[in-house]
Image (cartoon, rainbow, N blue to C red; front, top):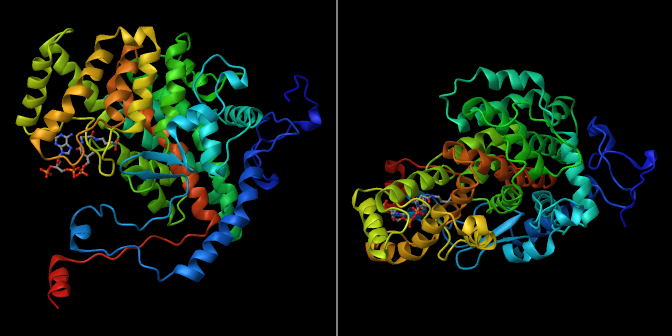
Length: 472
Ligand code: CMX
């Protein structure tokens, strides 16, 4: 039960084992568990599970790899461990076994921690991803307050960001700024001090929380410098949750609909199993024991590609292009013609298709569902066009006959609500995705270190070597 008066002695870091405790004064109720304690509890079982798998099944086949895998982007090859989520081609993503609708039902929401808003908190999702358990409202609130206590940027990082030219893409600014945060990496410091391998996960978790907490301020500073919106100071209000503070920093704090949308957006974009470019990159770079800042900066560079995270910028660009062409009340034929014109020009339809999914993306469905709940979004011509295209594009893409999945992915829906709420600088959209992806990619880095996973080093072959091998 939440009590409003908290004895001073009961206040301590919501997460950290003493040696890595954040200097910040985060608030935690003595009866609730901190995130570090909750993660610490699962460590023995996770290690035992890995030892059991190693001793009993190390030689068990997982299907064969073939030449098609080697030259075809390793589609479907089972060669990575990823704890937080599993992606099924038909039913979509589950986070520790929970689908998005289940998470929407079970995870603590803004209202549950005393803030205005109905959507699940990204803080709750982070707890689930790291522990496999649904947090109580008190635990979610404690984690939220802990993150807010870590959110202030070092002043040298602010200065670095302020030197970037406005013309530098926001994603490049974002990854560069994240790299500089490694100046204060607790993992790097612990490693240099000779901390034992079995304890690596603790400073990795500390860096993870520091980094996630600081991403909104980095993003908002870039947004202010490039687009002139927000107060430019990235003020943090400790009574607000993560998305609420972020929304205020960006200058949209008065728009409850946008703030609640951000909560949902950040929660569903966080984790999408390990094989996608951004998640895999974080795991790969982290496997060299690079600290979480370096690993996540690399991840962001992958997210900035147009076939991955940049697609959400491309989608809005393309939707507005179609809107200019067909107007606000187009016929089905006009929209269909616009889809064919895109395909015939040799371009992909952005926001459609997926390397794994073979059904509409449940993340798309969740964001679409949000639009259906809000009158201001229902009346938006941009949202309406997105919804119309989601019905008309699949038959066109099927007839076109190339893509294995003609259905919308998350990027098809994510930008239109932002645009409608006035966050219309779509060059910035992938930065929002980048704030979110940290909620999934970084917890896996913690698991990598709990499990002591080795450096990644798959085998490559030249075409000559490949031919020699297969001709034998
Ligand atoms: N429009 C037109 N053609 C498409 C297409 C689309 N939306 N999606 C796939 N295709 C084409 C591919 O370009 C490929 O053509 P070629 O054989 O000429 O190279 C063919 O269909 C087969 O591709 P696939 O096996 O179905 O898809 P991949 O696994 O290779 O690629 C993806 C997946 C997402 C990169 C691809 O569907 C695509 O480019 N979609 C548009 C961009 C996009 O929305 N990306 C965001 C994905 C989600 C995310 O990561 O954020």
